[in-house]
Image (tube, rainbow, N blue to C red):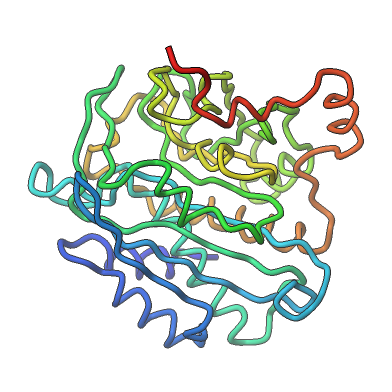
Length: 314
């Protein structure tokens, strides 16, 4: 279980300032090597944020010259806080809370010798004073940097598949308290939902798996004037790797800038799912998509990579 890790990370990020240094110190204390943790402050017109990347080398992973696949886990969000507009961790911050708690748990597992076959790369960004933006049906958190900047720092070319974790409570599409997964997105195609991920979800939750629908608009880049469900699938615009959105959900619409919405048990359950996917994926026991079927669909219908671009100018 990850409840201890969730509470520890929560205490570090539910405060003003720049907690990235304290997070790094906690991971170093749990034997994450300094060469496997990178952080960088990035400033743009709307503010600044700290990107962080933590790599966990596997027994048979690329870092050790092996061939086991690498799983990327991205915490997708606008910001952890909306200070001074709102005080406290906002709902939108749960993507970062989840993946950082998962990183701390993986560090402690490796510390005692429990090492998965494949490498795992966890990325997110940490900003406690992000802007807010209007959105229907409830307000969203904005971002201090552009989504393209986030992709630059969050999406790593070594990732063979990506789980993009994002709070997705601000809608009337998903009426479920817990988490849900999207269909797999690869190179502009929306593919079938992974049966292997559904099985792992059943095991870790003890419930029927939950999924959510996505549209063509959702897998195109932001800033193209199209409506997006949220930013959960933006990593899919910057990689050839298959991407699955993992949405942190609620039964009713909750503003992304709302405080008091974080649920430690919900985050813990999702963290266990991420860890089990990482274990199975490194063993080649978890497929995000059917490679033969993908080859067939591209042979029949051609490339859809243009959907990863901003499209034609109007």
